[in-house]
Length: 93
Image 1 (cartoon, rainbow, N blue to C red):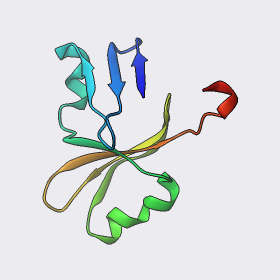
Image 2 (image 1 turned 90 degrees about the horizontal axis):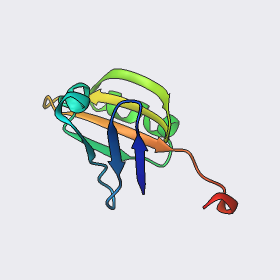
Image 3 (image 1 turned 135 degrees about the vertical axis):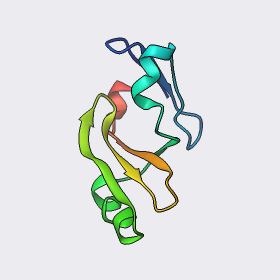
């Protein structure tokens, strides 16, 4: 998957389970504290899991062009973004 977000000057590319973000330094500034982005099958189903393991939700689930995401700070200090992608009907792929 490859997705451009021209409004903020970034591009998202999915490589297996990793979702790197590309762009100029200024465009990437808001993402610098996030160490990784991982897709999940269902953000709603996954949401309780990090909290059960002692993590804190930094940004609650919100709508983004690819579906919904949330940002979590884990007990070890790592900041991870989880993304639940919107399913595209086969007729549109």
